[in-house]
Length: 146
Image 1 (cartoon, helix red, strand yellow):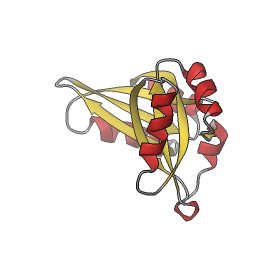
Image 2: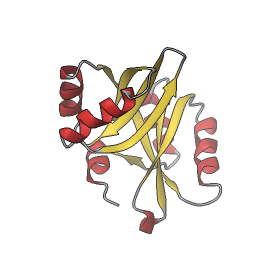
Image 3: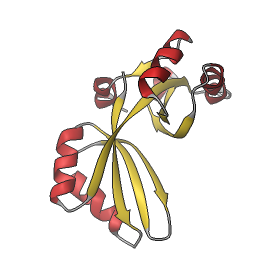
């Protein structure tokens, strides 16, 4: 049930992120979620897109350095304490979170989405499924419309 995340390494200077998004836009790649971290010299854009393979190909063709990682996407209640409840399940299942970021689902359903990078994706999925967590698939992420 894991989904694929693309990490794009960016030189930390004005316009680099815009260059990446321009490549994606010109090739009709739809970003579903994005997280940006930085150091003094470079940044890492972590993105969830509708077409992973095509996105990686066009980014590489445009001289961006990319990698693909497995992450889990969890549907959470979009209400006060929704994230806290999910994090309690992670803690109870002894699943370590390396990082996380959110994305928008259909707001009419009262749900939000969270991307989690964990130490052991398949092990975490098994433990968290037993807790009743709802995971999103790559196809479900692709189909999200707002």
